[in-house]
Amino acid sequence: MKMLINVPETVVADGLRGMAAAHPDLTVDVENRVIVRRDAPVAGQVALISGGGSGHEPLHGGFVGPGMLSAACPGEVFTSPVPDQMARAAAAVDSGAGVLFIVKNYTGDVLNFDMAAELAEDEGIQVGKVLVNDDVAVTDSLYTAGRRGTGATLFVEKIAGAAAAEGQPLERVEAVGRQVNENARSFGVALSAVTTPAKGSPTFDLPSGELELGIGIHGEPGRERRAMMTSGEIADFAVHAILEDMPPRNPVLVLVNGMGATPLLELYGFNAEVQRVLGERGVTVARTLVGNYVTSLDMAGASVTLCQVDEELLRLWDAPVKTPALRWGM
Amino acid sequence: MLDADFFRRWMTATAASVDREAERLTALDSAIGDADHGSNMQRGFTAVLASLEEEAPATPGAVLVLAGRRLISTVGGAAGPLYGTLLRKAGKALGDATEVSEKQLAEALRAGVDGVMALGGAAPGDKTMIDSLVPAVDALGEGFAAARSAAEQGAEATIPLLARKGRASYLGERSIGHQDPGATSSALLIAGLEEAASGASGE
Image (cartoon, rainbow over all chains, first blue to last red; front, side, top):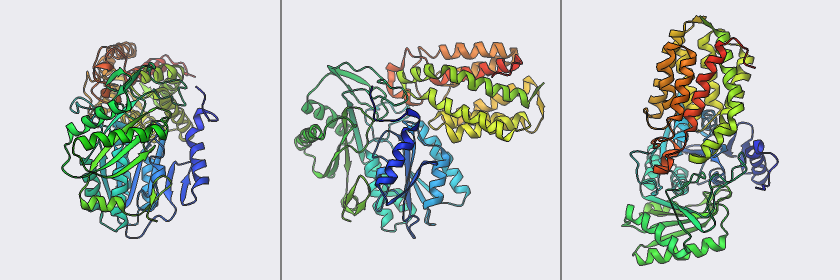
């Protein structure tokens, strides 16, 4: 597989150097793998810190900036960051108002963020945590590591980030983040497997006439494989899977998210089908976001995330944000 | 009796076998995980050897605590905290003694394995590193060779199991038929004990 890289070992560092060059509003510590908004710490504001394996860009580094994250800690490709990174980030961005860790529910992320919380608390930093676990494809939470954190991460980071930017206290920002997660569900499909730089060949074999339903964002195979479906059929399947798990009473935010290698034209077409299904099911759409936000390297495919919002959450979603990947109102 | 040098040889032998088997670990991980276990463990043990060289810890306990700390700060994923906890807890259990018996090592490793189970929440049969570590520690009383074969058998015995922890658990039934990469690397760690005991420098 051809890749636009130098050598696999420096993929993450090379990407960070390029990010630093492109975004002067960010301070990028390439050696220690921490991306921080340049004006941090911001007095009186809770600081949001997230992180995870690399390969999901723009998540999380692309969401660092006013109104969203204060810092992001990228790990190796598809490997959670180490505790030292989050502890360093916490020390850099804490204004005294505390930090909120936003953690996608994967065993490695949870363990490393928990260890980081201990390190930060030893330094006298107040730490809150929101665990994101929105993936309805994981049906058997009892005998697995639980539902995975996927597309809802964007909603949690944006909405909790807006609450933090208003100067709300840590307990409140944490509660908002949890509320978003509890009201968000996702479902993803893959049309192709993913190729990590370290391995150089696809992590699983997906024949051309088939698709994988219920995938994660790390190239792990999904739960079920079927003959290829149309965009409309996939939208039916994904939206029904979500609504079965969470029949919404409130309007929803919709994220139609590309996994990395699916053209925006196809994503918009898929969004049209998602909106059709939502209309048929009587679900009111408050806002829609279409694009590549929570990706899986070069995987083709898409995920749908729905997040029920009340007026307050919708107000926080609409609040100004200024990051490399998400920007409005400022 | 086992001195700090034995424990350094153990880490060196493990680093060498992780290097040798990295591609196999990654291949196993790509079947039921995310295809990076080999390179992550390689990065970790390379850092462990560098730290042992630099800081030259003087006791068995200090060697393991330092190795565990380095794994936590370099490996990432679940493997970093889990392997790091295994070695750190075992090292702490050995205390400040300059030499320890094989029995003390077995007890310390038992404490380390208990720490891994507490942290990761896995029990035997969940298709994780525990499936190779628990039989290995049980067999340590009969010597390092017995522990090695128990660990290797434990790793192979994960093939028919359904994964209930970690990323492989998302596959459900489809995790059956694959050997667990974590149990496989754990068997390499246990095998390193026998190599260290054989007196070779392990380089």
